[in-house]
Image 1 (cartoon, one colour):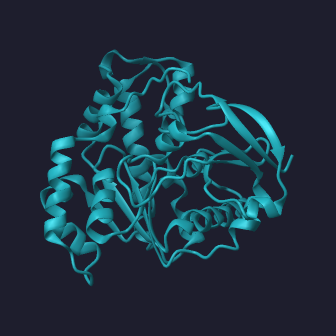
Image 2 (cartoon, one colour):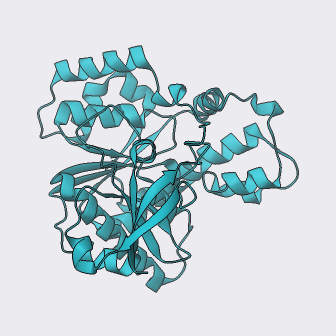
Length: 328
């Protein structure tokens, strides 16, 4: 079954923050597709990977990267999807490599809870660059972990380029903002598109912990993690498996914050990074922050003020997300 089309009959996912997976939908198979049919397919975007079967799932809820109504692609895709097309990864890559790379591309990595959504909105509203915010197909790849085999690393880098080419159909200029764990594959993404800008956003660890505790509605010291919890959170906090003995919410949030920071520090002198931005500096003077990254471009100060005003009134989008969902 290299390529097949399905109708979504149910949506049993209960936690919106869990990375997209093939367990998110209850499907009814409709028909098989040819490679030519897939190449002509419009109105679908990559949703998640099934690495066990070697397939990529695309859904028909294409999100307008110029719109800001939903800051998270994985959320909009899940809520609005009606159909799934499952494609053999090799066939997908062959078709995707026929599309051009974007003319300009910026990757935004972060610690999480550090103003990355605000930064994406500034790029969208001030510079007019469309934003793909946290597409989970990249999260799925990063969850595989560190690449120790050179051939495997090259294969992943090539597949990252295929994904970027496929997504760039929406615009020749693009920003892709990732979930925090995607930084573990920052070099592979840079291998895919060497000329892309790479931005790292960070924030004081205490503030990050406080923000995560709020969105998860947890008292960190009282939040005790069992073995199942530790396995579930390992995707987000790769260092948690190194902790021995009882683990609480403080340990988890520290690992969550430390993983991307350590990865950034490990690669800081490699020439990979265009800029590293402290949330406090971004919030204090966003116009100067943008000028520092894009010194040759005009920055609309009025547009900056508009974005910052909306941010201060609305707060973080995640603070209003219903993380627990009822089955469809």
